[in-house]
Amino acid sequence: MKLAEIKETELPDELKKLSASEREKLLNERVAKRKEIQERITELSARRQSHLAEQMKMAMAEGKSNLDLPIYDCVKAQAAKRGIAYTAGPSL
Image: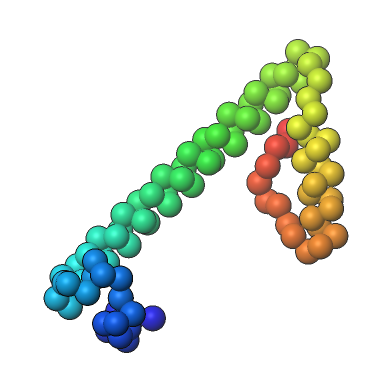
């Protein structure tokens, strides 16, 4: 949906007091900021997953018990029965 297609009465108060060009500029800034935040979340999530995998490998190598993998495998199997696929998560 385009901003121009939205009725002014449906806009938040913050946007109602702006001109059309100012609205467009503000929304473009927010879209860019959101994209930047999403990219950062994706990056941090990947780093976290890598760190957790490394920690699990170290724990397994030291002979420590790890309950995360059996629980994850169980949840993953149950989700698969309902058509949900997990592509990330604990693994060795």
